[in-house]
Image 1 (tube, protein in one colour):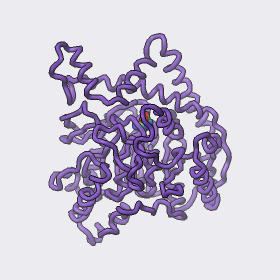
Image 2 (image 1 turned 90 degrees about the horizontal axis):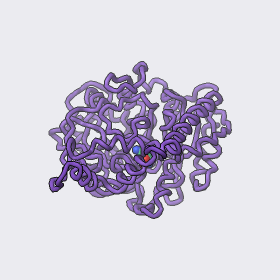
Image 3 (image 1 turned 120 degrees about the vertical axis):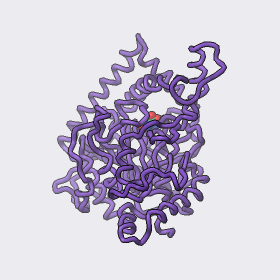
Length: 482
Ligand code: GLN
Protein backbone atom coordinates (compact mmCIF):
# COMPACT_ATOMS: atom_id res chain seq x y z
CA UNK A 1 0.00 0.00 0.00
CA UNK A 2 3.10 2.18 -0.10
CA UNK A 3 1.79 4.04 -3.15
CA UNK A 4 -1.05 5.40 -1.01
CA UNK A 5 1.36 7.48 1.05
CA UNK A 6 1.43 10.32 -1.42
CA UNK A 7 -1.98 9.85 -2.98
CA UNK A 8 -4.01 13.00 -3.47
CA UNK A 9 -7.33 13.63 -1.76
CA UNK A 10 -9.04 13.24 -5.14
CA UNK A 11 -7.40 9.84 -5.71
CA UNK A 12 -8.30 8.66 -2.23
CA UNK A 13 -11.90 9.78 -2.75
CA UNK A 14 -12.08 7.64 -5.86
CA UNK A 15 -10.56 4.60 -4.13
CA UNK A 16 -13.03 4.94 -1.28
CA UNK A 17 -16.04 5.50 -3.53
CA UNK A 18 -15.11 2.51 -5.70
CA UNK A 19 -14.69 0.47 -2.53
CA UNK A 20 -11.15 -0.45 -3.50
CA UNK A 21 -10.22 0.49 0.04
CA UNK A 22 -12.31 0.98 3.16
CA UNK A 23 -12.22 3.98 5.48
CA UNK A 24 -10.94 1.71 8.25
CA UNK A 25 -8.08 0.46 6.10
CA UNK A 26 -7.13 3.99 5.13
CA UNK A 27 -7.17 5.11 8.73
CA UNK A 28 -5.04 2.13 9.79
CA UNK A 29 -2.65 2.90 6.97
CA UNK A 30 -2.01 6.47 8.12
CA UNK A 31 -1.93 5.53 11.79
CA UNK A 32 0.77 2.98 10.97
CA UNK A 33 2.74 5.59 9.11
CA UNK A 34 2.61 7.88 12.13
CA UNK A 35 3.72 5.02 14.36
CA UNK A 36 6.68 4.41 12.10
CA UNK A 37 7.73 7.96 11.24
CA UNK A 38 6.53 10.29 13.96
CA UNK A 39 9.32 9.18 16.33
CA UNK A 40 11.77 10.36 13.65
CA UNK A 41 10.02 13.59 12.64
CA UNK A 42 8.23 14.70 15.82
CA UNK A 43 5.52 16.16 13.57
CA UNK A 44 2.61 15.33 15.88
CA UNK A 45 2.33 16.05 19.58
CA UNK A 46 -0.48 13.54 19.93
CA UNK A 47 -1.99 10.83 17.74
CA UNK A 48 -5.35 9.59 18.95
CA UNK A 49 -6.40 6.01 19.59
CA UNK A 50 -8.03 4.51 16.57
CA UNK A 51 -11.34 3.93 18.34
CA UNK A 52 -11.77 7.51 19.47
CA UNK A 53 -10.91 9.45 16.33
CA UNK A 54 -13.25 12.40 15.82
CA UNK A 55 -15.16 12.81 12.61
CA UNK A 56 -14.78 9.28 11.34
CA UNK A 57 -18.40 8.22 11.59
CA UNK A 58 -20.05 11.10 9.83
CA UNK A 59 -20.36 9.98 6.23
CA UNK A 60 -21.20 13.15 4.46
CA UNK A 61 -18.74 14.89 2.28
CA UNK A 62 -15.80 14.80 -0.01
CA UNK A 63 -13.34 14.47 2.86
CA UNK A 64 -15.19 11.66 4.64
CA UNK A 65 -12.73 8.94 5.54
CA UNK A 66 -9.70 11.01 4.47
CA UNK A 67 -7.65 11.80 7.57
CA UNK A 68 -6.01 15.09 8.42
CA UNK A 69 -3.84 16.57 11.17
CA UNK A 70 -4.71 19.71 13.16
CA UNK A 71 -2.22 22.27 14.46
CA UNK A 72 -2.26 22.14 18.23
CA UNK A 73 -3.48 25.71 18.65
CA UNK A 74 -6.97 25.01 17.27
CA UNK A 75 -9.58 23.85 19.78
CA UNK A 76 -10.95 20.35 19.33
CA UNK A 77 -13.58 19.48 21.96
CA UNK A 78 -12.45 17.15 24.76
CA UNK A 79 -8.90 17.00 23.41
CA UNK A 80 -5.82 18.41 25.00
CA UNK A 81 -4.57 21.60 23.43
CA UNK A 82 -1.04 22.66 24.31
CA UNK A 83 -0.03 25.36 21.80
CA UNK A 84 3.32 23.59 22.33
CA UNK A 85 3.60 25.42 25.64
CA UNK A 86 4.10 24.21 29.18
CA UNK A 87 1.64 26.82 30.38
CA UNK A 88 -1.27 24.83 28.95
CA UNK A 89 -0.27 21.62 30.71
CA UNK A 90 -3.38 19.57 31.41
CA UNK A 91 -5.73 21.90 29.51
CA UNK A 92 -8.54 20.31 27.53
CA UNK A 93 -10.72 22.09 24.98
CA UNK A 94 -14.35 22.49 25.97
CA UNK A 95 -15.64 23.20 22.47
CA UNK A 96 -14.82 22.80 18.80
CA UNK A 97 -13.34 25.59 16.70
CA UNK A 98 -15.65 26.37 13.78
CA UNK A 99 -13.16 24.87 11.32
CA UNK A 100 -13.17 21.67 13.39
CA UNK A 101 -16.94 21.38 13.54
CA UNK A 102 -17.13 21.95 9.78
CA UNK A 103 -14.56 19.23 9.14
CA UNK A 104 -16.30 16.82 11.49
CA UNK A 105 -19.61 17.45 9.76
CA UNK A 106 -17.93 16.47 6.50
CA UNK A 107 -16.74 13.23 8.02
CA UNK A 108 -13.02 14.04 7.99
CA UNK A 109 -11.19 11.88 10.54
CA UNK A 110 -9.02 14.21 12.63
CA UNK A 111 -6.25 11.89 13.73
CA UNK A 112 -4.07 14.04 15.89
CA UNK A 113 -2.43 17.28 16.88
CA UNK A 114 0.51 18.82 15.05
CA UNK A 115 3.62 20.28 16.63
CA UNK A 116 4.24 24.04 16.32
CA UNK A 117 6.37 26.85 17.63
CA UNK A 118 5.12 27.79 21.08
CA UNK A 119 1.92 29.82 20.60
CA UNK A 120 2.78 29.94 16.88
CA UNK A 121 5.72 32.26 17.58
CA UNK A 122 8.64 31.33 15.41
CA UNK A 123 9.73 30.19 11.97
CA UNK A 124 11.30 26.82 12.70
CA UNK A 125 9.17 24.82 15.20
CA UNK A 126 12.19 24.96 17.50
CA UNK A 127 10.41 26.97 20.20
CA UNK A 128 8.00 24.06 20.86
CA UNK A 129 8.07 22.80 24.44
CA UNK A 130 7.90 19.32 22.89
CA UNK A 131 11.13 19.59 20.92
CA UNK A 132 11.69 20.55 17.30
CA UNK A 133 10.05 18.90 14.29
CA UNK A 134 12.48 17.61 11.65
CA UNK A 135 12.29 18.40 7.96
CA UNK A 136 11.59 15.13 6.08
CA UNK A 137 13.93 16.23 3.26
CA UNK A 138 16.86 16.49 5.66
CA UNK A 139 16.47 15.45 9.27
CA UNK A 140 19.12 17.92 10.44
CA UNK A 141 17.04 20.80 9.19
CA UNK A 142 13.92 22.59 10.34
CA UNK A 143 10.59 22.24 8.53
CA UNK A 144 9.96 25.96 9.00
CA UNK A 145 7.29 27.29 11.29
CA UNK A 146 5.30 27.94 13.13
CA UNK A 147 3.08 25.24 11.56
CA UNK A 148 6.11 22.97 11.03
CA UNK A 149 4.49 19.78 12.34
CA UNK A 150 1.56 20.06 9.93
CA UNK A 151 3.90 20.76 6.99
CA UNK A 152 6.33 17.93 7.80
CA UNK A 153 3.49 15.42 8.18
CA UNK A 154 2.00 16.27 4.79
CA UNK A 155 5.43 16.37 3.09
CA UNK A 156 6.34 12.93 4.49
CA UNK A 157 3.05 11.42 3.35
CA UNK A 158 1.72 10.82 6.87
CA UNK A 159 -1.54 12.58 5.98
CA UNK A 160 -2.84 14.08 2.73
CA UNK A 161 -3.83 17.41 4.31
CA UNK A 162 -3.39 19.38 7.52
CA UNK A 163 -4.46 22.63 9.12
CA UNK A 164 -2.05 25.29 10.23
CA UNK A 165 -2.43 28.92 11.22
CA UNK A 166 -0.87 32.12 9.97
CA UNK A 167 -0.04 35.37 11.62
CA UNK A 168 2.97 36.32 9.53
CA UNK A 169 3.73 33.40 7.23
CA UNK A 170 3.39 30.29 9.37
CA UNK A 171 1.70 28.25 6.66
CA UNK A 172 3.39 29.56 3.52
CA UNK A 173 6.96 29.49 4.87
CA UNK A 174 6.88 25.85 6.14
CA UNK A 175 5.04 24.80 2.96
CA UNK A 176 7.92 26.33 1.00
CA UNK A 177 10.60 24.65 3.10
CA UNK A 178 8.86 21.25 2.95
CA UNK A 179 7.99 21.23 -0.77
CA UNK A 180 4.20 21.31 -0.45
CA UNK A 181 1.38 23.79 -1.05
CA UNK A 182 0.21 26.10 1.73
CA UNK A 183 -2.50 28.74 1.59
CA UNK A 184 -3.32 31.69 3.79
CA UNK A 185 -6.83 32.76 2.89
CA UNK A 186 -8.06 36.35 2.86
CA UNK A 187 -8.48 37.72 6.37
CA UNK A 188 -12.08 36.94 7.27
CA UNK A 189 -12.69 34.14 4.75
CA UNK A 190 -12.19 31.40 7.37
CA UNK A 191 -13.47 31.61 10.92
CA UNK A 192 -10.97 32.16 13.72
CA UNK A 193 -13.43 31.02 16.37
CA UNK A 194 -11.51 28.48 18.44
CA UNK A 195 -8.10 29.38 17.02
CA UNK A 196 -5.83 30.47 19.87
CA UNK A 197 -5.16 34.14 19.26
CA UNK A 198 -1.61 35.27 18.65
CA UNK A 199 -2.27 38.62 16.91
CA UNK A 200 -5.98 38.79 16.20
CA UNK A 201 -5.86 41.35 13.40
CA UNK A 202 -3.44 39.12 11.46
CA UNK A 203 -4.43 35.53 12.36
CA UNK A 204 -6.03 33.18 9.83
CA UNK A 205 -6.39 29.41 9.67
CA UNK A 206 -4.45 28.00 6.71
CA UNK A 207 -4.28 24.71 4.84
CA UNK A 208 -1.48 22.37 3.75
CA UNK A 209 -1.75 19.77 1.00
CA UNK A 210 0.42 18.42 -1.78
CA UNK A 211 -1.47 20.07 -4.64
CA UNK A 212 -3.53 23.17 -5.33
CA UNK A 213 -6.48 20.91 -6.15
CA UNK A 214 -6.41 19.30 -2.71
CA UNK A 215 -6.18 22.72 -1.08
CA UNK A 216 -9.30 23.76 -3.01
CA UNK A 217 -11.18 20.76 -1.61
CA UNK A 218 -10.38 21.59 2.01
CA UNK A 219 -10.87 25.34 1.57
CA UNK A 220 -14.36 24.74 0.18
CA UNK A 221 -15.27 23.13 3.50
CA UNK A 222 -13.69 25.75 5.75
CA UNK A 223 -14.54 29.01 4.00
CA UNK A 224 -17.60 31.06 4.83
CA UNK A 225 -19.16 33.40 7.31
CA UNK A 226 -19.46 32.37 10.95
CA UNK A 227 -21.76 34.08 13.42
CA UNK A 228 -19.22 33.29 16.13
CA UNK A 229 -16.46 35.32 14.48
CA UNK A 230 -17.59 38.82 13.63
CA UNK A 231 -14.49 39.37 11.50
CA UNK A 232 -15.65 36.77 8.97
CA UNK A 233 -16.87 38.16 5.66
CA UNK A 234 -20.27 37.60 4.24
CA UNK A 235 -19.38 35.60 1.16
CA UNK A 236 -21.32 32.95 -0.70
CA UNK A 237 -20.15 29.43 0.01
CA UNK A 238 -18.48 28.03 -3.04
CA UNK A 239 -16.72 24.99 -4.41
CA UNK A 240 -13.20 26.13 -5.19
CA UNK A 241 -12.50 23.06 -7.34
CA UNK A 242 -15.01 24.35 -9.92
CA UNK A 243 -12.58 26.86 -11.42
CA UNK A 244 -9.70 24.36 -11.66
CA UNK A 245 -9.93 23.54 -15.33
CA UNK A 246 -6.18 23.42 -15.90
CA UNK A 247 -6.33 26.66 -17.85
CA UNK A 248 -5.18 30.16 -17.11
CA UNK A 249 -7.74 32.93 -16.96
CA UNK A 250 -7.77 34.70 -20.35
CA UNK A 251 -5.75 37.91 -20.29
CA UNK A 252 -4.10 36.99 -17.02
CA UNK A 253 -1.26 39.23 -15.75
CA UNK A 254 1.23 38.43 -12.99
CA UNK A 255 3.41 41.12 -11.43
CA UNK A 256 6.95 40.26 -10.40
CA UNK A 257 7.81 42.20 -7.25
CA UNK A 258 11.29 43.16 -8.29
CA UNK A 259 12.63 44.48 -5.03
CA UNK A 260 11.76 41.19 -3.35
CA UNK A 261 13.26 38.94 -5.97
CA UNK A 262 16.38 41.07 -5.93
CA UNK A 263 16.53 41.56 -2.16
CA UNK A 264 19.83 41.05 -0.36
CA UNK A 265 19.99 37.68 1.33
CA UNK A 266 17.92 35.89 -1.32
CA UNK A 267 19.85 32.85 -2.57
CA UNK A 268 20.55 32.62 -6.27
CA UNK A 269 18.84 29.26 -6.26
CA UNK A 270 15.64 30.91 -5.01
CA UNK A 271 15.96 33.60 -7.66
CA UNK A 272 16.32 30.93 -10.35
CA UNK A 273 13.16 29.24 -9.14
CA UNK A 274 11.23 32.48 -9.56
CA UNK A 275 12.72 33.05 -13.01
CA UNK A 276 11.77 29.54 -14.07
CA UNK A 277 8.23 29.88 -12.66
CA UNK A 278 7.83 33.16 -14.54
CA UNK A 279 8.87 31.41 -17.77
CA UNK A 280 6.42 28.58 -17.11
CA UNK A 281 3.62 31.06 -16.54
CA UNK A 282 4.52 32.88 -19.74
CA UNK A 283 4.32 29.60 -21.63
CA UNK A 284 0.87 29.12 -20.16
CA UNK A 285 -0.17 32.44 -21.65
CA UNK A 286 0.32 34.78 -18.69
CA UNK A 287 1.58 38.31 -19.31
CA UNK A 288 4.37 39.25 -16.91
CA UNK A 289 4.83 42.79 -15.61
CA UNK A 290 7.47 44.20 -13.32
CA UNK A 291 6.01 45.83 -10.27
CA UNK A 292 7.68 48.13 -7.80
CA UNK A 293 6.38 48.09 -4.25
CA UNK A 294 9.00 49.84 -2.11
CA UNK A 295 6.65 50.01 0.89
CA UNK A 296 7.03 46.25 1.34
CA UNK A 297 10.55 46.84 2.66
CA UNK A 298 8.91 48.17 5.82
CA UNK A 299 6.49 45.27 6.24
CA UNK A 300 8.70 43.13 8.47
CA UNK A 301 9.34 46.04 10.87
CA UNK A 302 5.65 46.90 11.08
CA UNK A 303 4.77 43.22 11.51
CA UNK A 304 7.34 42.86 14.26
CA UNK A 305 5.71 45.66 16.26
CA UNK A 306 2.04 44.92 15.63
CA UNK A 307 2.33 41.16 16.18
CA UNK A 308 4.17 41.62 19.49
CA UNK A 309 1.74 44.29 20.67
CA UNK A 310 -1.29 42.11 20.03
CA UNK A 311 0.45 39.05 21.44
CA UNK A 312 1.12 40.86 24.70
CA UNK A 313 -2.60 41.55 25.10
CA UNK A 314 -3.80 38.15 23.90
CA UNK A 315 -1.46 36.18 26.10
CA UNK A 316 -2.46 38.08 29.23
CA UNK A 317 -5.21 35.50 29.69
CA UNK A 318 -2.70 32.77 30.56
CA UNK A 319 -2.41 33.75 34.18
CA UNK A 320 -2.53 30.51 36.15
CA UNK A 321 -6.18 31.03 37.06
CA UNK A 322 -8.10 30.03 33.98
CA UNK A 323 -6.03 27.49 32.07
CA UNK A 324 -3.42 24.80 32.60
CA UNK A 325 -0.39 25.37 34.77
CA UNK A 326 -0.56 27.15 38.17
CA UNK A 327 2.29 27.88 40.53
CA UNK A 328 1.23 26.49 43.90
CA UNK A 329 4.08 27.79 46.04
CA UNK A 330 3.45 31.50 45.51
CA UNK A 331 2.64 33.56 48.60
CA UNK A 332 0.45 36.12 46.88
CA UNK A 333 -1.82 36.39 43.85
CA UNK A 334 0.64 38.64 42.02
CA UNK A 335 3.46 36.19 42.67
CA UNK A 336 1.27 33.35 41.44
CA UNK A 337 0.68 35.21 38.15
CA UNK A 338 4.30 36.01 37.58
CA UNK A 339 5.73 32.65 38.67
CA UNK A 340 3.23 30.74 36.55
CA UNK A 341 3.98 32.90 33.52
CA UNK A 342 7.71 32.71 34.08
CA UNK A 343 7.71 28.92 34.40
CA UNK A 344 5.03 28.26 31.81
CA UNK A 345 6.15 30.41 28.88
CA UNK A 346 9.34 29.72 26.96
CA UNK A 347 11.94 32.40 26.30
CA UNK A 348 10.65 33.39 22.85
CA UNK A 349 7.13 34.00 24.14
CA UNK A 350 8.37 35.97 27.15
CA UNK A 351 10.58 38.08 24.87
CA UNK A 352 7.64 38.91 22.65
CA UNK A 353 5.36 39.83 25.55
CA UNK A 354 8.04 42.21 26.83
CA UNK A 355 8.53 43.81 23.42
CA UNK A 356 4.76 44.04 22.94
CA UNK A 357 4.18 45.81 26.23
CA UNK A 358 7.07 48.14 25.51
CA UNK A 359 5.82 49.25 22.08
CA UNK A 360 2.38 49.90 23.53
CA UNK A 361 3.58 51.76 26.59
CA UNK A 362 2.82 55.44 27.15
CA UNK A 363 5.61 57.48 25.60
CA UNK A 364 6.55 54.80 23.06
CA UNK A 365 3.25 53.94 21.39
CA UNK A 366 3.40 56.87 18.95
CA UNK A 367 6.94 56.08 17.90
CA UNK A 368 6.37 52.35 17.41
CA UNK A 369 2.79 51.13 17.36
CA UNK A 370 1.13 54.06 15.63
CA UNK A 371 3.85 54.32 13.01
CA UNK A 372 3.54 50.60 12.35
CA UNK A 373 -0.20 50.98 11.85
CA UNK A 374 0.46 53.78 9.39
CA UNK A 375 2.84 51.56 7.42
CA UNK A 376 0.18 48.88 7.48
CA UNK A 377 -2.37 51.19 5.89
CA UNK A 378 0.15 52.22 3.22
CA UNK A 379 0.89 48.60 2.40
CA UNK A 380 -2.78 47.91 1.92
CA UNK A 381 -3.23 50.97 -0.26
CA UNK A 382 -0.19 50.24 -2.44
CA UNK A 383 -1.21 46.61 -2.86
CA UNK A 384 -4.71 47.64 -3.92
CA UNK A 385 -3.11 49.88 -6.48
CA UNK A 386 -0.84 47.12 -7.73
CA UNK A 387 -3.88 44.91 -8.18
CA UNK A 388 -5.43 47.49 -10.44
CA UNK A 389 -2.55 46.71 -12.83
CA UNK A 390 -2.04 42.96 -12.38
CA UNK A 391 -4.15 39.96 -11.34
CA UNK A 392 -1.61 38.36 -9.02
CA UNK A 393 1.86 39.04 -7.65
CA UNK A 394 4.76 36.59 -7.53
CA UNK A 395 7.51 36.70 -4.89
CA UNK A 396 9.81 34.21 -3.18
CA UNK A 397 8.27 32.50 -0.14
CA UNK A 398 11.55 32.38 1.74
CA UNK A 399 15.10 33.60 1.10
CA UNK A 400 16.84 30.19 1.28
CA UNK A 401 16.16 26.48 1.56
CA UNK A 402 15.54 24.98 5.00
CA UNK A 403 18.16 25.98 7.56
CA UNK A 404 19.77 23.71 10.13
CA UNK A 405 18.24 23.04 13.53
CA UNK A 406 20.04 25.39 15.92
CA UNK A 407 21.45 27.59 13.13
CA UNK A 408 19.66 30.72 14.32
CA UNK A 409 20.12 30.90 18.06
CA UNK A 410 19.62 33.77 20.51
CA UNK A 411 22.80 35.43 19.13
CA UNK A 412 21.53 35.78 15.57
CA UNK A 413 17.81 35.82 16.15
CA UNK A 414 17.21 38.65 13.72
CA UNK A 415 18.10 36.35 10.84
CA UNK A 416 15.27 34.10 11.94
CA UNK A 417 12.90 37.06 11.96
CA UNK A 418 13.90 37.73 8.36
CA UNK A 419 12.02 34.57 7.45
CA UNK A 420 8.88 36.71 7.71
CA UNK A 421 10.10 39.25 5.16
CA UNK A 422 8.27 37.85 2.12
CA UNK A 423 5.15 36.61 3.81
CA UNK A 424 4.05 39.00 6.54
CA UNK A 425 2.94 41.87 4.28
CA UNK A 426 -0.05 39.80 3.19
CA UNK A 427 -1.08 39.32 6.81
CA UNK A 428 -0.81 43.05 7.40
CA UNK A 429 -2.98 43.82 4.37
CA UNK A 430 -5.30 40.82 4.73
CA UNK A 431 -4.61 39.60 1.17
CA UNK A 432 -4.56 35.88 0.42
CA UNK A 433 -1.30 34.11 -0.42
CA UNK A 434 -0.29 30.67 -1.55
CA UNK A 435 3.12 29.00 -1.58
CA UNK A 436 3.74 26.52 -4.38
CA UNK A 437 6.73 24.16 -4.80
CA UNK A 438 8.91 25.51 -7.61
CA UNK A 439 12.23 23.69 -7.47
CA UNK A 440 15.10 22.46 -5.32
CA UNK A 441 18.48 23.61 -4.09
CA UNK A 442 21.59 21.67 -5.14
CA UNK A 443 21.25 19.73 -1.88
CA UNK A 444 17.74 18.68 -2.78
CA UNK A 445 15.98 21.03 -0.40
CA UNK A 446 12.62 22.28 -1.66
CA UNK A 447 12.10 25.91 -2.70
CA UNK A 448 8.68 27.49 -2.96
CA UNK A 449 7.40 30.63 -4.59
CA UNK A 450 4.43 32.66 -3.62
CA UNK A 451 1.40 34.08 -5.39
CA UNK A 452 -0.46 36.92 -3.70
CA UNK A 453 -3.87 38.03 -4.88
CA UNK A 454 -6.48 40.71 -4.23
CA UNK A 455 -8.90 40.14 -1.36
CA UNK A 456 -11.06 37.06 -1.97
CA UNK A 457 -9.18 35.97 -5.07
CA UNK A 458 -8.63 32.42 -3.77
CA UNK A 459 -10.48 30.99 -6.78
CA UNK A 460 -8.14 32.71 -9.22
CA UNK A 461 -5.02 31.89 -7.18
CA UNK A 462 -5.93 28.22 -7.01
CA UNK A 463 -6.85 28.09 -10.69
CA UNK A 464 -3.47 29.59 -11.58
CA UNK A 465 -1.56 27.30 -9.21
CA UNK A 466 -3.42 24.27 -10.53
CA UNK A 467 -2.65 25.19 -14.15
CA UNK A 468 1.02 25.52 -13.17
CA UNK A 469 0.94 22.11 -11.52
CA UNK A 470 -0.46 20.55 -14.69
CA UNK A 471 2.73 21.44 -16.56
CA UNK A 472 5.31 21.00 -13.77
CA UNK A 473 6.29 18.12 -11.49
CA UNK A 474 7.82 19.81 -8.45
CA UNK A 475 4.84 19.00 -6.26
CA UNK A 476 5.11 15.32 -7.19
CA UNK A 477 8.60 14.92 -5.71
CA UNK A 478 8.76 13.31 -2.29
CA UNK A 479 11.48 12.95 0.29
CA UNK A 480 13.35 9.65 0.14
CA UNK A 481 13.02 7.23 3.05
CA UNK A 482 9.35 7.93 3.62
N1 GLN B 1 7.48 33.68 11.95
C1 GLN B 1 6.43 34.59 12.29
C2 GLN B 1 6.47 34.90 13.75
O1 GLN B 1 7.22 34.30 14.41
C3 GLN B 1 5.13 34.06 11.85
C4 GLN B 1 4.39 33.30 12.86
C5 GLN B 1 3.03 32.95 12.42
O2 GLN B 1 2.62 33.20 11.29
N2 GLN B 1 2.28 32.38 13.34
O3 GLN B 1 5.78 35.73 14.24
